[in-house]
Amino acid sequence: MLPQQLSHPINAPSASYTVTLLKKQLRQLEESKTIEGVSVGLESNSLYQWNISFAGPSDTLYEGGYFQAMMKFPEDYPNSPPTFKFLTEMWHPNIYSDGRVCISILHAQDEFNDQEPPETRWRPILTPEDVLISIVSMLSEPNINSPANVDAGIQFRDKPDEYKKKVRKLIDKALENL
Image (cartoon, rainbow, N blue to C red; front, side, top):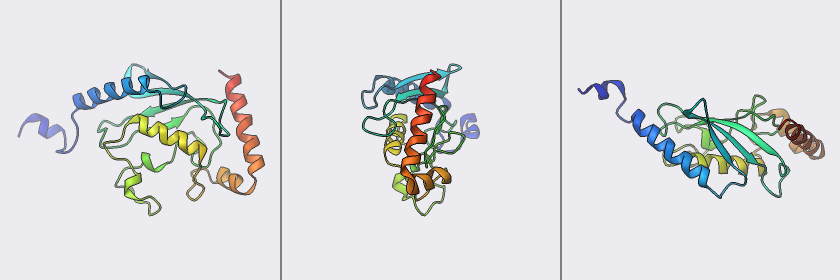
């Protein structure tokens, strides 16, 4: 056996492949016109940790907001999905109270969830831009059938005016802290 075969499982990408792919995908996201007001930078010069900022989507409750987040990539990327965590305080059914995002595209194929068809979960062909598009879409259309933040999900369903007021308050607070 070759040394490389010993250190990497058969289907795992090499570190050089992952670095090359992340460089390419970072450049594509920086040049993208798909997501309004997106800005991407590296955390501590690591291609495996991206600081992401973007404007709230137009015609949504989050319009006018500016959100900061961190996307982290595992060593076996793209075979495994990145993680996405908002650094801006958020109130949303699909965002845990610590900022971690819970949507299908960030779930590995081997994670069992009977509410998620396999085609909606992470696949190596997907990109960070696809993840960000899904997150922007999630902000517009929360999935309250499988909430990460149960309290936000219940409030969204049962008391939409209070939900909207809380979201606006957090957006205003975030803008003050820029």
